[in-house]
Length: 87
Image 1 (tube, rainbow, N blue to C red):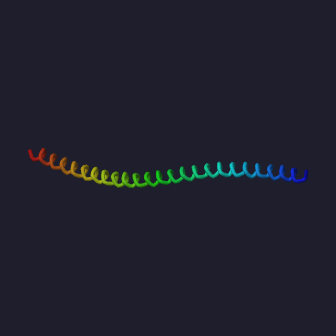
Image 2: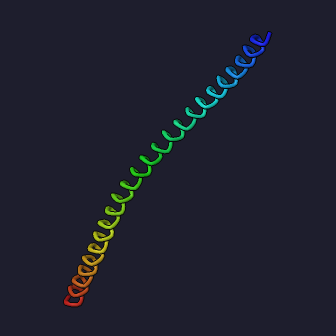
Image 3: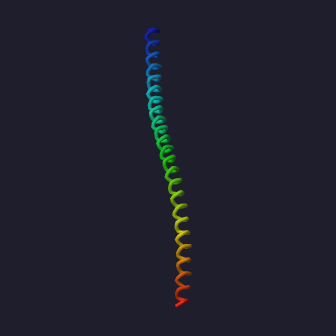
């Protein structure tokens, strides 16, 4: 009878350990999924940072071009006014 009780107790402990292993495996899957998501977001953030740098450089170039155009326009206005004054 004692052997039977020990067998039942060991079986209960086995089932508890089995449940705990299943829970830990599920938690492992969740953590792996979170890690994958974090790595994807990190990659996305790096890509966005690169795009930002490209856009900032393009913005700088466009501002420079605008400044040059404004300067050229001002020179043309002065030339036009001089011609009008000469006529």
